[in-house]
Image (cartoon, rainbow, N blue to C red; front, top):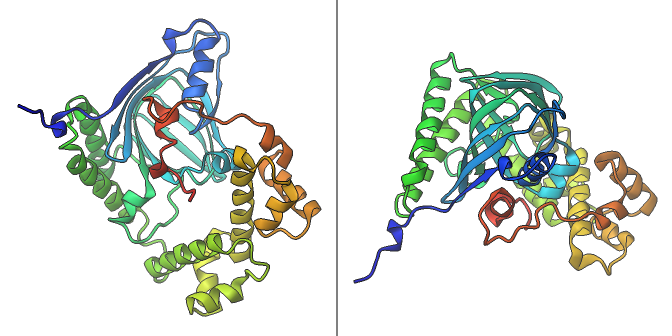
Length: 346
């Protein structure tokens, strides 16, 4: 008689800072969440508490978290270094935070649901809190939502019907996690992805953008083309228009809310260079040759832009240790967030 592997429970892990002593408590927490945030305690003199009860649900991550007050930051350096291409959806069941997402002010209290785009920046300060968190790759959302509109810093109030429904789903999802089997996981994950996608679609509709879905589709096609042609000295709005058979006016409208075409080309080149420099395989290659391969003709121009963007020199990236030293076979945030499903890297 053989057992059905689909009856096995989904992978899980539990982290508690209380397993460590003194200052090591926060250091351990910092390591555990390092791919998501740079963190700092609000009160360095008080004992720190942090716990994560996490589950890997068919390509997404579900976790119940409790933590002492702290500051969270995700800057452009961390965005580039981690390469995460996912949304972080959080229900605050206790506590809350104030902060900024891409420079826009936001505030979250118990009962609210907030959404962060992990390809964008944020800076928040939370009081002692408890959350249910969902890290969901954008590819899973794309199956149900054909227009990625900006959602970084979106807050769905707990006093609204949609916020209550979304919060109830996340709470029920968290409660069910310990008993979800591998056979049930795809259905549970698909239902959750559709719920999140429908919520994001509703919250970003009616924003005044004409043909928003078409513009977003053109933006995504353009970004794919840009990533595939970063080293070309001819990469420009004109070459993109010719390759995708669209007019300059259509292309510019698709990028109007995202910083412009040339700014996105520059950001993609800088991110690619960051990834190449942080890869130990490329240690034998000169920084100049990597910069040239990513589309920069001048070393001085590259070095200046790199430092302005990431706050560090290209040589600093080479010397920096990797964020996650955990093996992908080990359970936990560092290993699970290193899985290809969560990454924008090829």
